Length: 121
Length: 258
Image 1 (cartoon, helix red, strand yellow):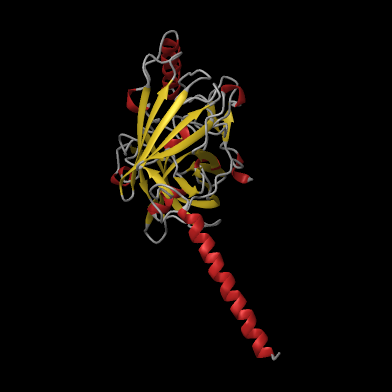
Image 2 (image 1 turned 180 degrees about the vertical axis):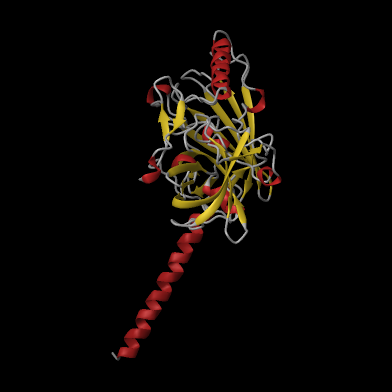
Protein backbone atom coordinates (compact mmCIF):
# COMPACT_ATOMS: atom_id res chain seq x y z
CA UNK A 1 0.00 0.00 0.00
CA UNK A 2 3.03 2.28 0.36
CA UNK A 3 3.17 3.01 -3.33
CA UNK A 4 -0.22 4.66 -3.12
CA UNK A 5 -0.07 8.40 -3.21
CA UNK A 6 -2.88 9.27 -0.86
CA UNK A 7 -4.47 12.55 -1.69
CA UNK A 8 -6.36 14.58 0.82
CA UNK A 9 -10.02 14.47 0.01
CA UNK A 10 -11.58 17.62 -1.27
CA UNK A 11 -14.56 18.37 -3.44
CA UNK A 12 -13.06 18.88 -6.88
CA UNK A 13 -14.73 21.11 -9.40
CA UNK A 14 -14.88 18.15 -11.78
CA UNK A 15 -16.77 16.09 -9.27
CA UNK A 16 -19.29 18.85 -8.72
CA UNK A 17 -20.05 18.92 -12.42
CA UNK A 18 -21.67 15.50 -12.39
CA UNK A 19 -25.06 14.79 -10.94
CA UNK A 20 -24.71 11.13 -10.30
CA UNK A 21 -27.32 8.50 -9.52
CA UNK A 22 -24.87 6.93 -7.16
CA UNK A 23 -27.36 4.81 -5.35
CA UNK A 24 -29.52 3.64 -8.20
CA UNK A 25 -28.33 0.08 -8.02
CA UNK A 26 -26.46 -0.13 -4.77
CA UNK A 27 -25.16 2.21 -2.13
CA UNK A 28 -21.65 3.54 -2.56
CA UNK A 29 -20.93 3.23 1.11
CA UNK A 30 -18.43 0.46 0.38
CA UNK A 31 -16.09 3.10 -1.02
CA UNK A 32 -14.03 5.41 1.17
CA UNK A 33 -15.15 8.85 0.17
CA UNK A 34 -12.60 10.47 2.46
CA UNK A 35 -9.61 9.07 0.64
CA UNK A 36 -8.37 9.29 -2.93
CA UNK A 37 -5.67 7.04 -4.30
CA UNK A 38 -3.61 7.88 -7.37
CA UNK A 39 -1.82 5.29 -9.50
CA UNK A 40 0.20 7.01 -12.16
CA UNK A 41 0.95 4.16 -14.53
CA UNK A 42 -1.43 1.23 -14.85
CA UNK A 43 -2.51 -0.95 -17.77
CA UNK A 44 -6.15 -1.40 -18.78
CA UNK A 45 -7.15 -5.05 -18.84
CA UNK A 46 -10.89 -4.61 -19.42
CA UNK A 47 -13.45 -1.87 -19.97
CA UNK A 48 -17.14 -2.74 -19.57
CA UNK A 49 -19.51 -0.10 -20.95
CA UNK A 50 -22.65 -1.35 -19.24
CA UNK A 51 -25.64 -0.30 -17.18
CA UNK A 52 -26.13 0.40 -14.37
CA UNK A 53 -22.44 1.28 -14.13
CA UNK A 54 -19.35 0.96 -16.26
CA UNK A 55 -16.28 -0.84 -14.96
CA UNK A 56 -12.61 -0.43 -15.66
CA UNK A 57 -10.06 -3.10 -14.73
CA UNK A 58 -6.43 -2.13 -14.56
CA UNK A 59 -3.26 -3.96 -13.67
CA UNK A 60 -0.51 -2.46 -11.56
CA UNK A 61 2.33 -4.97 -11.37
CA UNK A 62 0.65 -8.19 -10.31
CA UNK A 63 -2.38 -6.52 -8.74
CA UNK A 64 -5.62 -6.06 -10.66
CA UNK A 65 -7.92 -3.27 -9.55
CA UNK A 66 -11.65 -3.24 -10.24
CA UNK A 67 -12.96 0.29 -10.60
CA UNK A 68 -16.62 1.21 -10.72
CA UNK A 69 -17.66 4.23 -12.77
CA UNK A 70 -20.85 6.19 -13.25
CA UNK A 71 -23.61 5.20 -15.69
CA UNK A 72 -22.91 5.23 -19.45
CA UNK A 73 -25.54 7.97 -19.73
CA UNK A 74 -23.73 10.37 -17.40
CA UNK A 75 -20.29 9.34 -18.65
CA UNK A 76 -21.39 10.19 -22.19
CA UNK A 77 -21.96 13.75 -21.01
CA UNK A 78 -18.38 13.78 -19.76
CA UNK A 79 -17.06 12.71 -23.16
CA UNK A 80 -16.75 8.96 -22.67
CA UNK A 81 -17.56 6.36 -25.34
CA UNK A 82 -17.76 2.57 -25.29
CA UNK A 83 -14.25 2.40 -26.72
CA UNK A 84 -12.59 5.21 -24.79
CA UNK A 85 -10.40 2.64 -23.05
CA UNK A 86 -8.92 -0.40 -24.70
CA UNK A 87 -7.08 -3.39 -23.31
CA UNK A 88 -3.41 -2.53 -23.09
CA UNK A 89 -3.88 1.23 -22.73
CA UNK A 90 -1.50 2.76 -20.22
CA UNK A 91 -3.19 5.37 -18.09
CA UNK A 92 -3.13 7.06 -14.71
CA UNK A 93 -6.08 6.83 -12.36
CA UNK A 94 -7.47 8.48 -9.26
CA UNK A 95 -10.06 6.53 -7.30
CA UNK A 96 -11.86 6.26 -3.99
CA UNK A 97 -10.65 2.93 -2.57
CA UNK A 98 -12.81 0.12 -1.24
CA UNK A 99 -13.18 0.39 2.51
CA UNK A 100 -12.51 -3.32 2.99
CA UNK A 101 -8.98 -2.92 1.60
CA UNK A 102 -9.52 -5.06 -1.49
CA UNK A 103 -7.94 -3.79 -4.72
CA UNK A 104 -10.65 -1.67 -6.21
CA UNK A 105 -12.77 1.36 -5.78
CA UNK A 106 -14.81 4.04 -7.42
CA UNK A 107 -12.98 5.58 -10.34
CA UNK A 108 -12.84 9.35 -10.17
CA UNK A 109 -10.51 10.36 -12.99
CA UNK A 110 -8.55 8.79 -15.81
CA UNK A 111 -5.41 10.55 -17.03
CA UNK A 112 -4.23 9.78 -20.54
CA UNK A 113 -0.68 9.90 -21.85
CA UNK A 114 -1.72 12.84 -24.03
CA UNK A 115 -2.19 14.85 -20.87
CA UNK A 116 -5.96 14.83 -21.23
CA UNK A 117 -8.16 13.49 -18.49
CA UNK A 118 -11.75 12.33 -18.13
CA UNK A 119 -13.89 12.07 -15.05
CA UNK A 120 -15.69 8.81 -14.45
CA UNK A 121 -18.00 10.52 -11.93
CA UNK B 1 -48.19 -4.96 -72.79
CA UNK B 2 -44.73 -3.55 -73.07
CA UNK B 3 -42.26 -3.77 -70.24
CA UNK B 4 -42.45 -0.02 -69.85
CA UNK B 5 -46.23 -0.11 -69.39
CA UNK B 6 -45.96 -2.84 -66.77
CA UNK B 7 -43.34 -0.77 -64.96
CA UNK B 8 -45.57 2.31 -65.07
CA UNK B 9 -48.54 0.29 -63.82
CA UNK B 10 -46.51 -1.09 -60.92
CA UNK B 11 -45.22 2.37 -60.08
CA UNK B 12 -48.82 3.65 -60.01
CA UNK B 13 -49.91 0.85 -57.67
CA UNK B 14 -46.91 1.53 -55.44
CA UNK B 15 -47.79 5.21 -55.33
CA UNK B 16 -51.41 4.48 -54.35
CA UNK B 17 -50.19 2.05 -51.66
CA UNK B 18 -47.84 4.70 -50.30
CA UNK B 19 -50.69 7.20 -50.06
CA UNK B 20 -52.87 4.71 -48.17
CA UNK B 21 -50.02 3.87 -45.82
CA UNK B 22 -49.54 7.55 -45.17
CA UNK B 23 -53.28 8.11 -44.60
CA UNK B 24 -53.55 5.24 -42.16
CA UNK B 25 -50.55 6.59 -40.25
CA UNK B 26 -52.22 10.00 -40.04
CA UNK B 27 -55.47 8.40 -38.93
CA UNK B 28 -53.69 6.38 -36.20
CA UNK B 29 -51.90 9.50 -35.00
CA UNK B 30 -55.14 11.45 -34.85
CA UNK B 31 -56.68 9.08 -32.32
CA UNK B 32 -53.85 9.63 -29.83
CA UNK B 33 -55.46 12.06 -27.43
CA UNK B 34 -53.95 14.80 -25.30
CA UNK B 35 -50.76 16.87 -25.54
CA UNK B 36 -47.58 15.32 -26.86
CA UNK B 37 -45.76 13.91 -23.85
CA UNK B 38 -43.85 11.33 -25.89
CA UNK B 39 -40.09 11.27 -25.77
CA UNK B 40 -37.16 10.63 -23.47
CA UNK B 41 -37.40 12.31 -20.10
CA UNK B 42 -34.91 12.73 -17.27
CA UNK B 43 -35.62 13.75 -13.69
CA UNK B 44 -35.38 17.51 -13.35
CA UNK B 45 -34.25 18.99 -11.14
CA UNK B 46 -31.94 16.19 -10.06
CA UNK B 47 -33.19 14.34 -6.97
CA UNK B 48 -29.73 14.69 -5.46
CA UNK B 49 -29.78 17.76 -3.27
CA UNK B 50 -26.04 18.28 -3.48
CA UNK B 51 -24.43 17.45 -6.78
CA UNK B 52 -21.03 17.11 -5.18
CA UNK B 53 -22.23 14.40 -2.88
CA UNK B 54 -22.08 11.41 -5.19
CA UNK B 55 -21.95 9.04 -2.25
CA UNK B 56 -25.26 10.06 -0.74
CA UNK B 57 -28.24 7.78 -0.90
CA UNK B 58 -31.43 9.12 -2.43
CA UNK B 59 -33.41 11.13 0.09
CA UNK B 60 -37.04 10.19 0.78
CA UNK B 61 -39.01 12.75 -1.25
CA UNK B 62 -41.33 15.42 0.10
CA UNK B 63 -40.71 14.77 3.78
CA UNK B 64 -41.76 11.11 3.73
CA UNK B 65 -45.15 9.62 4.59
CA UNK B 66 -47.28 10.28 7.65
CA UNK B 67 -47.73 6.65 8.67
CA UNK B 68 -49.98 5.25 11.36
CA UNK B 69 -48.56 3.21 14.22
CA UNK B 70 -47.06 0.66 14.43
CA UNK B 71 -46.00 1.22 10.80
CA UNK B 72 -44.41 4.61 11.50
CA UNK B 73 -42.06 3.21 14.15
CA UNK B 74 -41.23 0.13 12.10
CA UNK B 75 -40.42 2.21 9.01
CA UNK B 76 -38.30 4.65 11.00
CA UNK B 77 -36.40 1.76 12.59
CA UNK B 78 -35.74 0.23 9.17
CA UNK B 79 -34.47 3.53 7.74
CA UNK B 80 -32.25 4.05 10.78
CA UNK B 81 -30.83 0.55 10.36
CA UNK B 82 -30.11 1.21 6.68
CA UNK B 83 -28.43 4.54 7.42
CA UNK B 84 -26.28 3.00 10.17
CA UNK B 85 -25.18 0.25 7.77
CA UNK B 86 -24.16 2.85 5.20
CA UNK B 87 -22.18 4.78 7.77
CA UNK B 88 -20.05 1.75 8.56
CA UNK B 89 -19.53 1.05 4.87
CA UNK B 90 -21.67 -2.09 4.75
CA UNK B 91 -24.83 -1.12 2.86
CA UNK B 92 -27.86 -3.40 3.08
CA UNK B 93 -29.23 -5.17 0.06
CA UNK B 94 -32.27 -3.67 -1.62
CA UNK B 95 -34.58 -4.62 -4.48
CA UNK B 96 -32.52 -2.90 -7.17
CA UNK B 97 -29.29 -4.60 -6.06
CA UNK B 98 -31.16 -7.86 -6.69
CA UNK B 99 -32.26 -6.55 -10.10
CA UNK B 100 -35.91 -6.68 -9.12
CA UNK B 101 -38.12 -4.16 -10.91
CA UNK B 102 -38.86 -0.91 -9.09
CA UNK B 103 -42.59 -1.13 -9.74
CA UNK B 104 -44.99 1.66 -8.81
CA UNK B 105 -44.53 4.44 -7.97
CA UNK B 106 -40.72 4.16 -7.82
CA UNK B 107 -40.32 3.77 -11.61
CA UNK B 108 -41.68 7.29 -12.03
CA UNK B 109 -38.73 8.60 -10.00
CA UNK B 110 -36.72 8.13 -13.21
CA UNK B 111 -33.32 7.69 -11.61
CA UNK B 112 -32.20 6.73 -15.10
CA UNK B 113 -34.09 8.29 -18.03
CA UNK B 114 -37.56 7.10 -19.03
CA UNK B 115 -39.23 7.08 -22.43
CA UNK B 116 -42.93 7.77 -22.87
CA UNK B 117 -44.81 6.44 -25.90
CA UNK B 118 -48.35 7.48 -26.83
CA UNK B 119 -50.30 5.08 -29.00
CA UNK B 120 -54.06 4.70 -29.48
CA UNK B 121 -55.56 3.67 -26.15
CA UNK B 122 -52.25 3.43 -24.29
CA UNK B 123 -49.42 5.42 -22.77
CA UNK B 124 -46.30 3.34 -22.17
CA UNK B 125 -43.42 4.16 -19.87
CA UNK B 126 -40.13 2.48 -20.72
CA UNK B 127 -37.43 2.90 -18.11
CA UNK B 128 -33.72 2.58 -18.84
CA UNK B 129 -33.26 1.42 -15.26
CA UNK B 130 -33.69 -2.37 -15.33
CA UNK B 131 -35.39 -2.17 -18.75
CA UNK B 132 -38.81 -1.81 -17.13
CA UNK B 133 -42.14 -1.46 -18.94
CA UNK B 134 -45.22 0.20 -17.47
CA UNK B 135 -48.51 0.26 -19.40
CA UNK B 136 -51.20 2.86 -18.77
CA UNK B 137 -54.53 2.00 -20.40
CA UNK B 138 -56.59 5.01 -21.47
CA UNK B 139 -60.28 5.27 -20.65
CA UNK B 140 -60.47 1.75 -19.31
CA UNK B 141 -62.36 0.91 -16.12
CA UNK B 142 -60.40 -0.21 -13.07
CA UNK B 143 -60.90 -3.97 -12.67
CA UNK B 144 -62.72 -5.14 -9.56
CA UNK B 145 -60.36 -6.09 -6.69
CA UNK B 146 -61.20 -9.74 -7.32
CA UNK B 147 -59.93 -9.37 -10.89
CA UNK B 148 -56.78 -7.47 -9.99
CA UNK B 149 -53.80 -9.78 -9.51
CA UNK B 150 -51.16 -8.02 -7.38
CA UNK B 151 -48.17 -6.97 -9.49
CA UNK B 152 -45.13 -4.68 -9.56
CA UNK B 153 -46.86 -1.94 -11.55
CA UNK B 154 -50.49 -2.71 -10.68
CA UNK B 155 -53.21 -1.76 -13.15
CA UNK B 156 -53.07 1.81 -14.43
CA UNK B 157 -56.15 3.48 -15.87
CA UNK B 158 -55.54 6.89 -17.41
CA UNK B 159 -57.72 9.63 -18.85
CA UNK B 160 -57.03 13.09 -20.17
CA UNK B 161 -58.63 15.81 -18.07
CA UNK B 162 -57.94 18.82 -20.28
CA UNK B 163 -54.17 19.01 -20.53
CA UNK B 164 -53.58 16.72 -17.56
CA UNK B 165 -53.19 12.97 -17.78
CA UNK B 166 -54.86 11.60 -14.66
CA UNK B 167 -53.79 8.04 -13.89
CA UNK B 168 -55.19 5.82 -11.18
CA UNK B 169 -53.18 2.76 -10.22
CA UNK B 170 -54.21 -0.10 -7.97
CA UNK B 171 -53.20 -3.69 -7.39
CA UNK B 172 -49.58 -3.17 -6.36
CA UNK B 173 -47.91 -6.03 -4.54
CA UNK B 174 -47.47 -5.30 -0.85
CA UNK B 175 -43.78 -6.21 -1.04
CA UNK B 176 -43.22 -3.61 -3.77
CA UNK B 177 -42.37 -0.57 -1.74
CA UNK B 178 -41.41 3.05 -2.34
CA UNK B 179 -38.46 3.85 -0.04
CA UNK B 180 -39.43 0.80 2.01
CA UNK B 181 -42.74 2.41 3.02
CA UNK B 182 -45.21 -0.34 3.93
CA UNK B 183 -48.63 -0.30 2.31
CA UNK B 184 -51.82 -2.31 2.07
CA UNK B 185 -53.14 -4.22 -0.93
CA UNK B 186 -55.76 -1.47 -1.24
CA UNK B 187 -53.26 1.34 -1.82
CA UNK B 188 -54.37 3.74 -4.55
CA UNK B 189 -51.94 5.93 -6.49
CA UNK B 190 -53.28 8.90 -8.42
CA UNK B 191 -50.93 10.71 -10.77
CA UNK B 192 -51.55 14.04 -12.46
CA UNK B 193 -49.08 14.38 -15.30
CA UNK B 194 -48.94 17.65 -17.25
CA UNK B 195 -46.57 19.71 -19.33
CA UNK B 196 -45.39 22.85 -17.53
CA UNK B 197 -43.25 24.01 -20.45
CA UNK B 198 -42.51 22.77 -23.97
CA UNK B 199 -40.06 20.21 -22.62
CA UNK B 200 -40.84 20.22 -18.92
CA UNK B 201 -43.33 17.96 -17.20
CA UNK B 202 -44.67 17.59 -13.70
CA UNK B 203 -46.07 14.46 -12.07
CA UNK B 204 -48.02 15.04 -8.88
CA UNK B 205 -48.45 11.68 -7.20
CA UNK B 206 -50.99 11.17 -4.43
CA UNK B 207 -50.76 7.94 -2.49
CA UNK B 208 -53.95 7.02 -0.63
CA UNK B 209 -53.84 4.16 1.83
CA UNK B 210 -56.10 4.81 4.84
CA UNK B 211 -55.09 1.54 6.52
CA UNK B 212 -51.46 2.70 6.74
CA UNK B 213 -51.40 6.46 6.19
CA UNK B 214 -52.81 9.16 8.46
CA UNK B 215 -53.13 11.38 5.40
CA UNK B 216 -52.30 10.92 1.71
CA UNK B 217 -48.60 11.02 0.90
CA UNK B 218 -48.00 13.50 -1.91
CA UNK B 219 -44.83 13.38 -3.99
CA UNK B 220 -44.05 15.61 -6.97
CA UNK B 221 -41.54 14.61 -9.63
CA UNK B 222 -40.33 16.93 -12.39
CA UNK B 223 -38.90 15.84 -15.73
CA UNK B 224 -37.05 17.46 -18.63
CA UNK B 225 -37.45 16.15 -22.18
CA UNK B 226 -34.18 15.03 -23.66
CA UNK B 227 -34.87 13.67 -27.11
CA UNK B 228 -31.22 13.72 -28.14
CA UNK B 229 -30.61 10.87 -25.72
CA UNK B 230 -31.25 7.27 -26.72
CA UNK B 231 -32.12 4.88 -23.95
CA UNK B 232 -29.37 2.34 -23.38
CA UNK B 233 -29.91 -1.32 -22.71
CA UNK B 234 -29.73 -2.46 -19.10
CA UNK B 235 -29.12 -6.12 -18.43
CA UNK B 236 -28.11 -7.58 -15.08
CA UNK B 237 -25.57 -9.97 -16.56
CA UNK B 238 -22.31 -8.58 -15.27
CA UNK B 239 -22.93 -7.65 -11.65
CA UNK B 240 -20.11 -7.61 -9.14
CA UNK B 241 -22.34 -7.34 -6.09
CA UNK B 242 -21.97 -9.95 -3.41
CA UNK B 243 -24.96 -10.36 -1.12
CA UNK B 244 -23.56 -11.44 2.23
CA UNK B 245 -25.36 -13.68 4.70
CA UNK B 246 -26.01 -10.73 7.00
CA UNK B 247 -27.87 -8.88 4.24
CA UNK B 248 -25.05 -6.46 3.48
CA UNK B 249 -23.67 -5.86 0.02
CA UNK B 250 -20.01 -5.87 -0.92
CA UNK B 251 -18.23 -5.90 -4.25
CA UNK B 252 -16.35 -8.80 -5.71
CA UNK B 253 -13.09 -7.19 -6.78
CA UNK B 254 -11.52 -10.51 -7.72
CA UNK B 255 -12.78 -11.15 -11.22
CA UNK B 256 -10.47 -8.79 -13.03
CA UNK B 257 -8.59 -11.64 -14.66
CA UNK B 258 -11.76 -13.08 -16.19
